[in-house]
Amino acid sequence: MKMKQSLIIMMFLTLFGLSFAAQSSAEVADSSKPYSGDFWSCSTLTGDWGGIRNDWAAKGITFDIDLTQTAQSVVIGGKDIGWEYGGRGDITFNLDTQKLGLWPGGFFTVEVEGNYGKSVNPDTGAIMAVNTNQMFPTTGDTQVNIPEVAFTQFLSHYFGVAVGKFDTTSGDANEFAHGKGDKQFMNLALNFNPAVLLTVPYSALGAAIIILPTKDPNEAIINLMYLDSNGKADDAGFDTVLEGNNTYSIEGRVRTNFFGMTGHQVVGATYSSKNFTSLDQSLRLIVESRAIQQEDNSWSIHYNFDQYIYEPKKGQGIGIFGRFGASDGDANPIHHFYSIGVGGKGVIPGRKLDEFGIGFYYIDISNPKFTGLLQRTRSFLRDEDGAELYYNLAITPWMQLTPDLQFIGPAQKDVLDIDRTTLIASKKKSVDTTTVIGLRLRMVF
Image (cartoon, rainbow, N blue to C red; front, side, top):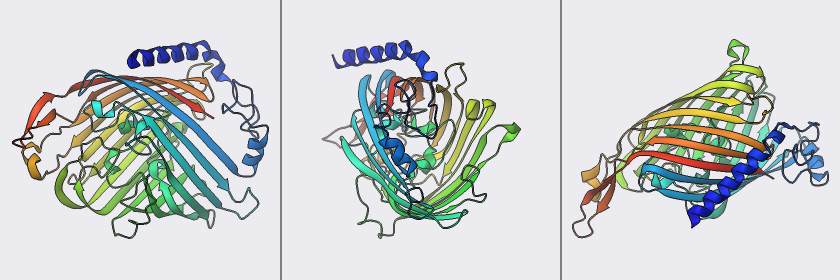
């Protein structure tokens, strides 16, 4: 019955989106009043709150509120077949001290985030989540967390510092393939470089140095960060920040403008001094928590690019993207990673807010060395690959409906069964190529 209800709801939403698709081309007329406009052209569902919201924005105070709901099903292969429904809400508060009339160069950010429901991530057999949105703030039971409370102060046009608890997903940015699975691709491998996920926690206390070589962060930016390797979204982190398990990272992003069109190049490296003893160190990797031979420290390098190849208007057109990552392959099961794809924004006449993407990824898996009773099943993982296709239909500027299709060659070879008497792990069934269909609805309030 639950599956039938989900199907009915998603069919209704699809028909609703198609019925009003022509309205999505409307844009906010006055950029000085970003929250103004009618029902079809306003950037948010709740509008300008009687003018208060625009007044606050002019003074440097903004509230970004959104809700993303997803229904997905494994229809072929995997570990289990069936529909799951879940969602994630996010509220981000930003304050600009200069606009507020205080001092120049100060920025304060607080993010509140929570999810509910379930995802099909555990059902695919893949090490990569097919629903990134449901991985944040944590993969556990429904809860609300505060993944970011951070303050940034620029000391000149070229240099700034930041302290606090950081949401690290702003790193590894890409024009066509980036985010928490709420705007573009849904698969984790096409939103971030998974080679860095073990060493860089999602939410952690730390400090950063920001360098702007040309004064303009859109042209070039360099970030150097120190983070607590044990950081978690559901923990303030003060009890672990001084334990000596530290993450150090450096990343640079530069705008290229090859062929007279927008493009970017990103390169970075990470190092963690943490001692890894299990595979549940990163909540963003879908691997069962198992004891492994202790590995001291871990490192990774990452690279990504995006480049428009057709750009009739800045920020609109068709482009290509790609990523490469590598790690030590000891504690980190992601030894090498590759992805490539095509993305588009506003390429259909009258559909300026629509987006689409086609992406492919491949992961060279390094099987960890297990301890205990699972020593006999060390090679339970194999290399993983996958492909995803989505189309983001903008019903209005504040509502997007996205059909999604994924094909995954999962890393997990078999579903294992443990004999409680002999404590011997035996093969239960093979995990075959997985096909996942889904529909996502994002609303901005």
